[in-house]
Length: 413
Image (cartoon, rainbow, N blue to C red; front, side, top):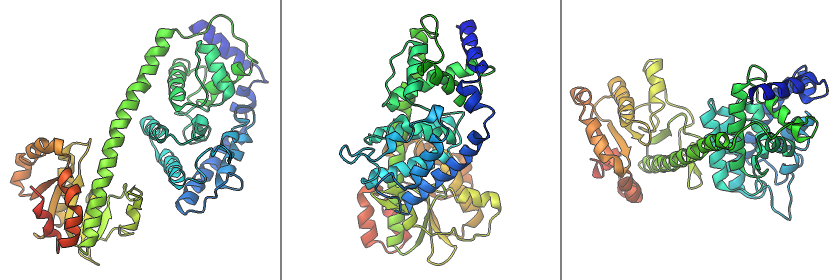
């Protein structure tokens, strides 16, 4: 494969009419488009959050984003078509369906803030699981401008080129097919990066030219069936892992919501971890329940940053006095949650606070083991734990009959 594919790349790069030269290199407009599109995506997210996003594609901030993309011509010509509102078909279902609209906004925000490949793929799989009509891998054209080294663009010509090059039959409208295609593209690009680029626009342009029948192939393709199957297994395994993480995240958010609800009912100021305040549960956003600004507390910067990551804190009304702190456990080690509570205890405790781990019922044995560690017992950090099932079933009663944070002792162990 190597010699033949290297020759194919040479042809692609040497022809002045191919997109490698007309779009990928020697094109300042392409680089400017990245900045404009990223600002536009941030505006889409803001409009959806503020409920100012219209019920049509026309004259929306999303139209601005897609216009910037389609102005790139060639590789991205027609990128806006999948986002046009088609009333009879009710697709894409992100204009009139508020839940889908919010999910799309959250997806864009999460992808924009993502730092790693795994984070981006996780968000794609979560979006795919929602099965929003008409919201398929055409979105990859947007994501490419957020993460050009992670997400390749996607359209009819590119997939036709892929199928021709790799003897495959991938389909256009499936995220699952796209992720499999992406695995092969990433693997191929890694092997030939010195001839292509870390920016996946280069290899996407190659496939585009093949799919547009401008770059003609010789022979039967360049990837064996065994190689393709091996690469596709990667995304199947990742999908399973992401689904498990998604289920854990849902439970984690639910427990945080119960704690915020109880704390407010008891008359305390409440706040969620700094990286969780954009979450919601049951249609209720955490930001609407939480303090808007973290209270000023007299600790060093490093400790403050750690304390701000505690899942839920209750403060005495109008003060910076912590009365209760809660760490909700999931896939992270229980010990890390204990350490965050310990940091708070050592730096701020005055004897009246209570510290709790909220743990899945299946992990009760683990939490007992960790709380019995000598480092915890010797420092007299009084941490108790509450099971998910107990918090879930008694939440309303605690809100109704509780008089202070000490009511949590009723369900703690």
